[in-house]
Length: 132
Image (cartoon, rainbow, N blue to C red):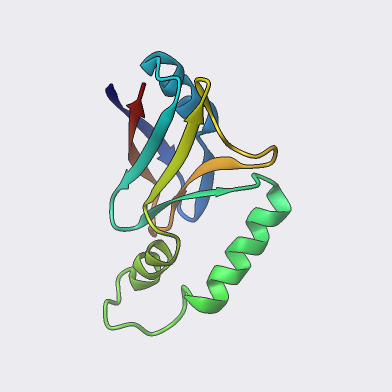
């Protein structure tokens, strides 16, 4: 069985938004008991990460990203190259196993959409659930 649904999320520039509960809801609606949940962020300057949604950790991630892909650096793609580089580092997809109708996330793991673009955007996340 396959079930697909999209999530649309308004995200400010350089912000992280937790979508775990929305993805869990889609898995419940799919009625898949055992399988996989795939997530794909549409857009070249957005990413999906699985990590702890803790404000100090998010700030640490932002500082880390500023060090490796500075928003003030010189780039050939001058408009928002650092946004594309940050997205490429984190990637725009995730796969999460499903067992007994639930995402197999650890206690502190959250699914977050990150908007690395220079302005606020509405991001679309395609969630596909496959299994029995």
